[in-house]
Amino acid sequence: MSKHQKRRAPAFQEYAADILANSQYRMMSLEEKGLLHVLRCECWVNDQVPAQHDDLARYLGVELQKITACLTPRILTFLKLEDGHLICPELNAYRASLIERSNKLSAGGSKGGKKTQEKNKSNQASLEASLKPLSRAETNKEEMKLDDFRSLDKGSTNQLLDPWVEEYEASPDASIEYINASQGV
Image (tube, rainbow, N blue to C red; front, top):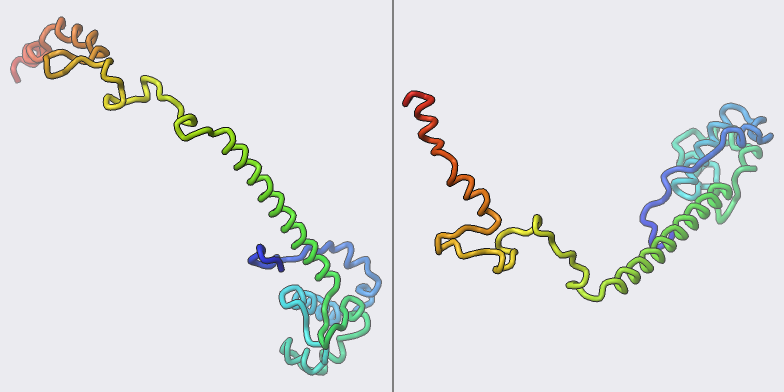
Protein backbone atom coordinates (compact mmCIF):
# COMPACT_ATOMS: atom_id res chain seq x y z
CA MET A 1 0.00 0.00 0.00
CA SER A 2 1.35 3.44 -0.89
CA LYS A 3 1.99 6.13 1.68
CA HIS A 4 -0.84 8.23 0.19
CA GLN A 5 -3.43 5.46 0.20
CA LYS A 6 -4.99 5.28 3.66
CA ARG A 7 -7.55 2.53 3.05
CA ARG A 8 -7.36 -0.64 1.08
CA ALA A 9 -9.73 -1.31 -1.77
CA PRO A 10 -12.90 -2.74 -0.21
CA ALA A 11 -13.72 -5.17 -3.01
CA PHE A 12 -12.33 -6.97 -6.00
CA GLN A 13 -14.09 -7.26 -9.31
CA GLU A 14 -14.69 -10.71 -10.69
CA TYR A 15 -16.51 -11.65 -13.86
CA ALA A 16 -18.71 -14.68 -13.35
CA ALA A 17 -18.13 -15.86 -16.92
CA ASP A 18 -14.36 -15.94 -16.34
CA ILE A 19 -14.54 -18.05 -13.20
CA LEU A 20 -17.24 -20.35 -14.62
CA ALA A 21 -15.20 -20.91 -17.79
CA ASN A 22 -12.19 -22.12 -15.77
CA SER A 23 -12.01 -25.89 -16.17
CA GLN A 24 -10.53 -26.41 -12.69
CA TYR A 25 -13.44 -24.52 -11.14
CA ARG A 26 -15.99 -26.46 -13.20
CA MET A 27 -14.59 -29.75 -11.88
CA MET A 28 -14.86 -28.73 -8.19
CA SER A 29 -17.49 -30.01 -5.83
CA LEU A 30 -19.80 -27.51 -4.17
CA GLU A 31 -17.71 -27.73 -0.96
CA GLU A 32 -14.51 -27.01 -2.90
CA LYS A 33 -16.10 -24.00 -4.60
CA GLY A 34 -17.23 -22.70 -1.22
CA LEU A 35 -13.76 -23.14 0.31
CA LEU A 36 -12.15 -21.45 -2.70
CA HIS A 37 -14.49 -18.48 -2.33
CA VAL A 38 -13.74 -18.17 1.42
CA LEU A 39 -9.99 -18.46 0.81
CA ARG A 40 -10.06 -15.78 -1.90
CA CYS A 41 -12.01 -13.44 0.39
CA GLU A 42 -9.52 -14.07 3.21
CA CYS A 43 -6.61 -13.43 0.85
CA TRP A 44 -8.21 -10.17 -0.29
CA VAL A 45 -8.67 -8.90 3.26
CA ASN A 46 -5.59 -10.42 4.93
CA ASP A 47 -3.25 -11.04 1.95
CA GLN A 48 -2.70 -14.68 2.93
CA VAL A 49 -3.95 -17.70 4.87
CA PRO A 50 -2.02 -20.41 6.70
CA ALA A 51 -0.89 -23.25 4.43
CA GLN A 52 -0.81 -26.00 7.08
CA HIS A 53 -4.14 -27.82 7.19
CA ASP A 54 -4.48 -27.77 10.98
CA ASP A 55 -3.60 -24.05 11.15
CA LEU A 56 -5.99 -23.28 8.28
CA ALA A 57 -8.81 -25.22 9.98
CA ARG A 58 -8.27 -23.26 13.21
CA TYR A 59 -7.98 -19.99 11.24
CA LEU A 60 -11.28 -20.57 9.41
CA GLY A 61 -13.03 -22.13 12.40
CA VAL A 62 -13.86 -25.43 10.67
CA GLU A 63 -13.03 -29.06 11.36
CA LEU A 64 -9.66 -30.35 10.13
CA GLN A 65 -11.39 -33.19 8.23
CA LYS A 66 -13.31 -30.66 6.10
CA ILE A 67 -10.11 -28.81 5.18
CA THR A 68 -8.32 -32.07 4.38
CA ALA A 69 -11.21 -33.25 2.19
CA CYS A 70 -11.82 -29.95 0.39
CA LEU A 71 -8.35 -28.40 -0.06
CA THR A 72 -7.69 -30.26 -3.30
CA PRO A 73 -5.20 -29.67 -6.11
CA ARG A 74 -8.04 -27.96 -8.03
CA ILE A 75 -8.28 -25.27 -5.35
CA LEU A 76 -4.50 -24.99 -5.15
CA THR A 77 -4.38 -24.03 -8.88
CA PHE A 78 -5.86 -20.68 -7.79
CA LEU A 79 -3.39 -20.23 -4.91
CA LYS A 80 0.36 -20.20 -4.42
CA LEU A 81 2.45 -21.40 -1.47
CA GLU A 82 4.72 -18.63 -0.22
CA ASP A 83 6.61 -18.58 3.12
CA GLY A 84 4.29 -21.07 4.80
CA HIS A 85 1.16 -19.26 3.65
CA LEU A 86 -1.22 -19.50 0.75
CA ILE A 87 -1.65 -16.35 -1.34
CA CYS A 88 -3.82 -15.60 -4.36
CA PRO A 89 -1.53 -14.21 -7.10
CA GLU A 90 -4.51 -13.10 -9.20
CA LEU A 91 -5.92 -10.95 -6.39
CA ASN A 92 -2.47 -9.60 -5.48
CA ALA A 93 -1.97 -8.50 -9.10
CA TYR A 94 -5.44 -6.94 -9.14
CA ARG A 95 -4.75 -5.09 -5.89
CA ALA A 96 -1.42 -3.83 -7.26
CA SER A 97 -3.15 -2.54 -10.40
CA LEU A 98 -5.72 -0.68 -8.26
CA ILE A 99 -2.95 0.90 -6.18
CA GLU A 100 -1.00 1.85 -9.29
CA ARG A 101 -4.09 3.40 -10.87
CA SER A 102 -4.88 5.30 -7.68
CA ASN A 103 -1.31 6.60 -7.45
CA LYS A 104 -1.37 7.72 -11.09
CA LEU A 105 -4.68 9.53 -10.57
CA SER A 106 -3.34 11.17 -7.44
CA ALA A 107 -0.13 12.25 -9.15
CA GLY A 108 -2.08 13.60 -12.13
CA GLY A 109 -4.43 15.50 -9.86
CA SER A 110 -1.54 16.93 -7.90
CA LYS A 111 0.27 17.97 -11.07
CA GLY A 112 -2.89 19.56 -12.49
CA GLY A 113 -3.55 21.34 -9.19
CA LYS A 114 -0.04 22.79 -9.14
CA LYS A 115 -0.42 24.04 -12.72
CA THR A 116 -3.74 25.66 -11.84
CA GLN A 117 -2.26 27.31 -8.76
CA GLU A 118 0.71 28.62 -10.76
CA LYS A 119 -1.63 29.93 -13.46
CA ASN A 120 -3.81 31.66 -10.86
CA LYS A 121 -0.79 33.18 -9.13
CA SER A 122 0.62 34.54 -12.39
CA ASN A 123 -2.76 36.07 -13.29
CA GLN A 124 -3.08 37.83 -9.95
CA ALA A 125 -0.64 40.72 -9.80
CA SER A 126 -1.95 41.80 -6.43
CA LEU A 127 -5.01 41.48 -4.26
CA GLU A 128 -6.25 44.91 -5.31
CA ALA A 129 -5.90 44.04 -9.00
CA SER A 130 -8.06 40.94 -8.57
CA LEU A 131 -10.96 42.77 -6.92
CA LYS A 132 -14.00 43.51 -9.06
CA PRO A 133 -15.30 47.04 -8.59
CA LEU A 134 -18.83 47.15 -7.24
CA SER A 135 -21.60 48.67 -9.31
CA ARG A 136 -23.69 51.49 -7.83
CA ALA A 137 -26.46 49.00 -7.01
CA GLU A 138 -24.02 46.79 -5.04
CA THR A 139 -22.69 49.54 -2.78
CA ASN A 140 -24.25 50.80 0.42
CA LYS A 141 -24.24 54.39 1.69
CA GLU A 142 -20.99 53.96 3.61
CA GLU A 143 -19.21 52.71 0.49
CA MET A 144 -20.43 55.44 -1.90
CA LYS A 145 -18.22 58.38 -2.56
CA LEU A 146 -18.86 61.47 -0.49
CA ASP A 147 -19.45 63.47 -3.67
CA ASP A 148 -22.66 61.50 -4.25
CA PHE A 149 -24.27 62.90 -1.09
CA ARG A 150 -25.34 66.25 0.20
CA SER A 151 -25.17 66.73 3.91
CA LEU A 152 -28.26 65.37 5.65
CA ASP A 153 -27.79 67.60 8.69
CA LYS A 154 -28.40 70.73 6.59
CA GLY A 155 -31.94 69.60 5.76
CA SER A 156 -31.16 68.23 2.31
CA THR A 157 -31.60 64.66 1.17
CA ASN A 158 -29.67 62.17 -0.85
CA GLN A 159 -29.58 63.15 -4.53
CA LEU A 160 -30.96 59.77 -5.47
CA LEU A 161 -34.00 60.32 -3.26
CA ASP A 162 -34.83 63.86 -4.45
CA PRO A 163 -37.47 62.83 -7.05
CA TRP A 164 -39.22 60.64 -4.49
CA VAL A 165 -39.17 63.39 -1.86
CA GLU A 166 -40.57 65.91 -4.33
CA GLU A 167 -43.42 63.53 -5.28
CA TYR A 168 -44.16 62.81 -1.60
CA GLU A 169 -44.26 66.48 -0.67
CA ALA A 170 -46.60 67.25 -3.60
CA SER A 171 -49.09 64.51 -2.68
CA PRO A 172 -52.05 65.22 -0.36
CA ASP A 173 -51.73 64.20 3.26
CA ALA A 174 -52.52 60.46 3.37
CA SER A 175 -53.47 60.49 7.04
CA ILE A 176 -56.28 63.03 6.48
CA GLU A 177 -57.63 60.93 3.59
CA TYR A 178 -57.61 57.84 5.84
CA ILE A 179 -59.42 59.63 8.63
CA ASN A 180 -62.06 60.90 6.26
CA ALA A 181 -62.53 57.47 4.61
CA SER A 182 -62.80 55.65 7.94
CA GLN A 183 -65.03 58.40 9.41
CA GLY A 184 -62.64 58.85 12.30
CA VAL A 185 -62.93 55.28 13.51
